[in-house]
Length: 498
Image 1 (tube, rainbow, N blue to C red):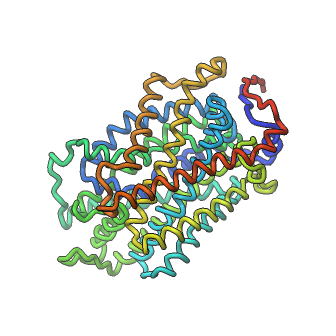
Image 2 (image 1 turned 180 degrees about the horizontal axis):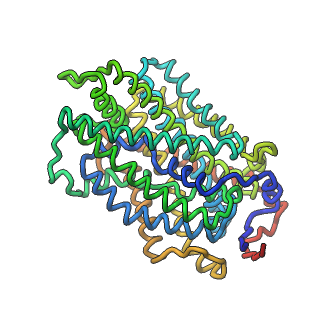
Image 3 (image 1 turned 30 degrees about the vertical axis):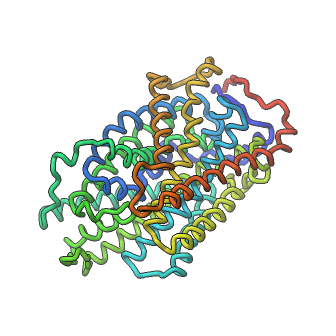
C-alpha cells in the first residue's frame, strides 16, 4: 500500500495504540449519523417550501462536489487526522494547526449549544418543565454522557453513531408515515406552487443551514488508520450515506410544511411541534389556539419519539466528536498544539484528554449561554447554531482548496479516486462556505430572536470566533517543544509497498 507520512515522530509513537475497528458498514452508518442532523430540520422548514427546492439545488452544486473532493483526499492520503494532514501538506503546520482548532472547537460549541438546548427543550415538551436549575442539570448530563461515549474504545464507541443512524431511520421514517396517516384523516396545509419558487432571500437564509446539513464526509478520514481497507471503504460509505441522507431530510421537512402553519414554524421547535401534532392521530387533539394535547397511544408514542430525538441529537455530537477530537490529538502530537493533549489512551486508543477538555468547554458554553440569554431557548439556539456553522466553515476555507494544491505539490501520490472537474469542484465548495460565513456573521436580515439587536448578534458571533482563532495560535506556541524535537518534519511523499 502506498501512503504519505507527513507527521512527526512524536505521533508515530502514539499511533501504536490504534486498533482497526471500523468496517465498511460501520463507516456508512457513522456517516449517516453525522450527516443527518435533527437539530436543523426545523430551521429549513421555517423558510417554507422553497427550502426543499434549495435542498435539491445544493445537493447538485455542493453536496456532490464535496463528496468528490473528500473522497479524493481521503483515499490519496489515508492517514489518521484526515483534514489536519491534508491542510498541513498543502499549507504548512501553522495554518493547519490553527485551522484544526477551529474545526475541533466547533464541537463543544455545538454540544453545549444547539444540541443540548434541543435535548432540554424536547424533554420539557414531552415530559415535564425543568426551570433554570433543571435546564443546567439536564444540559450538563447530556454533555457528559457524550464525553463518556467518545472516550470509549472505537470498537465499542462506534456503536453509538450506529445506534444514532438507526434511531434516525426509525424516527424520521415513522414521522413521515404518520404524516401520511394524519393527512388522510385531517387534511394538510395547502402549499401553493408559488411557495416553491426559489428566491434570493430564501437562498441567503437557507444556504448556511442546508450546507451544514450536508457536511461531515471528511470525518471518517480522521480515523483512517482505524479502518479496514480505507481506500475502498471511504468511497463506498460516502456514496451510500450521501444518498440516504438526502432522502431522510426531504421527507420530514415536507411533513412539517404539510402539518404546521408556516407562520408557526420556528427553527428550534419546528420538528418537535410537527411531531406532536402528527401524533394526535394515535390519540390526542389540537385546540383552536393551536395547543396540542396527546393522550393514550399518542402520548406513549410521543415519549418514544422524544427519547429518539434526544438520542439522535446526542449521537450527532458524539459522531462529530469521535472525528474532530482524533484530528486535534494528531495535531497536538505533531507539534501544532500542546503535547499533553496529543496522548492517546494505551487501553482504549482514544484521545481522552481532548475529550475531557471538550466536555469542560461545552459545559462552560452551556452555563454561559443559558445565563446570558436568561433561558431564552430560541435566542440561545439561533446564536449557537450560527456560531457552530461559521466556526466549522472557516476551517473548510483551507481544507477544501487542499485538493488542488496537493495535486500540484504531490502529483505522484497515488489517487485511487480523482475528483472530476477539480477546479469547478473546489470553487463551488469553497465559494459556498465562504458565502455562508459572511451571511452568518453579518446577515442581511437579523434572525427573529435578535430583532433590533444587531450589535448583540454580531458580538455573539465575532467575539467567540476571535477567541477560538486566538486559542489556535496559543496551541501552536505550546507545541514548540514538540517541534523542537523534530526539526525536519517530513513533508515529502514516501512510498511503501505492502
